[in-house]
Length: 238
Image (tube, rainbow, N blue to C red; front, side, top):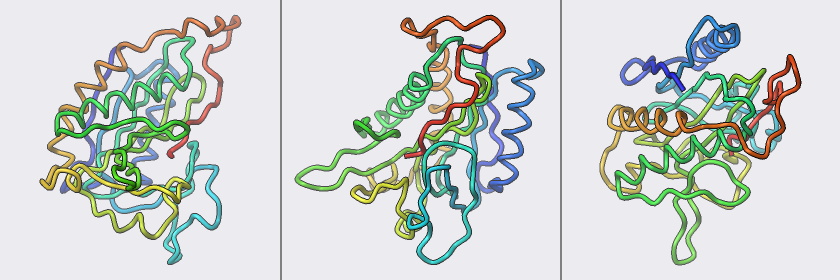
């Protein structure tokens, strides 16, 4: 898979969420039309809460902070400085199951975490990447994945907590999960690790894992004139 990587908002030039969403939608239209190659945006946002379609009222910020409602799957999360966000806008091989694409994103992040001596894992029933609790401690989420697939082309993507403040998560029911915590690379290692420190490795791993995406052997071939991927599918930012 041919990929173009664009770094559009790393510190100190954080990208406003609405600007990033506009970038995504424009790129999605162009990739869908065949006028742009597959593109991955890598960035840090200014502070913002975003809510996927399944967000419940009681999960929103307890202090009434404004939330941006978005067209991805999943629930409520936070973006801001110190967190690396990736938006792959790409046409999936046909037919590819959305779950395989999500797994590819998770695999890339797990490989990056291993560079820092961290054992990132998947948790059954929950997307994203986790650091498992020990001695009765809570599991801690270190990376979230939330996507949308429209006419076979992806939007939204992932966020990896690097050096961001974790306090904003205390104001919400993050990702609709009340029995787990949130962490970052810096919190786990005791060393300041910024998005700029990890972005090159994230890019390398994404290039590798996404290049290996292939049609799912159990998926039915597409009907004439239709994409083998569902016209609109969503994966949870959970």
